[in-house]
Length: 372
Image (cartoon, rainbow, N blue to C red):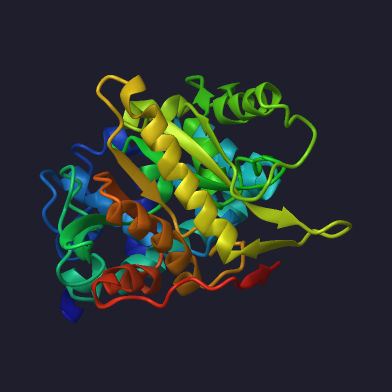
């Protein structure tokens, strides 16, 4: 395999072709390095273009979260709603992530960003396909061919509950009715250019024009409306509160509701905040209760819900603590007879491994405080 691994320079040249063409115009492009690597790292795709896209998503997901990954997503058209944007519009949006001019981004940052992507593609090319896709036992869902979906069976209350594990960015979720999103107790969403779960969902739900101009910011606007209707405008809600809104542009991916779970408590006079595992469990339990309340209000009824590991990103909880806190609510609900289609979405192999070990049991959530 090593003898056929493409070098970074040739991959960088091919990535520039992808940047100029965009994902919707890959047909007929000569991309031998990317296609040969995709055959190893992202097997099962129906077309060469789909395989290359799956490879790019795997590589970009391995970049450091923040400006680097976000700029790469915009540059290559991987960010939600940008796959058909002109190259100039994608470059302009990527430049804004770094706060530099388009020309400076073209000469400096863009080369660095694509170079980092090329470096990760080389690493993927030298790894077994199963490892690159996220581990043995992975199965592909919705025809993506990226090996980022798998099923975990858990024994709860004398029956087996099947969990679907997604190992990819949250904004790539498809055909999941409800996504739970962590937020602070002031229900203030992070800026769209940031890399958190809440920011990714806000960005993906936003409505853009053909040139990338922001036309609507529905999660932000609906969350303000929810706070106003419930007498919470301008003040904090109790930790564990869940605010339900629509999903904006994510409805095009089959996501119908976003449940904003208030778990982070800002610390006065600082940029830090506190997260308690008990608040995470309370929020997850409340999300399941809201799902039960809303179930029959939709046609077809709501059935599936996806949890990130609430509190384990910038919230400061470890992956294990975040998983234990969410699972305590899911397990209790299932033990009472609830039959929801439960999903978890994570980014790292470490977090995925913890979810996959759920059948062997995890330690129950303690009232542990995480600070940032």
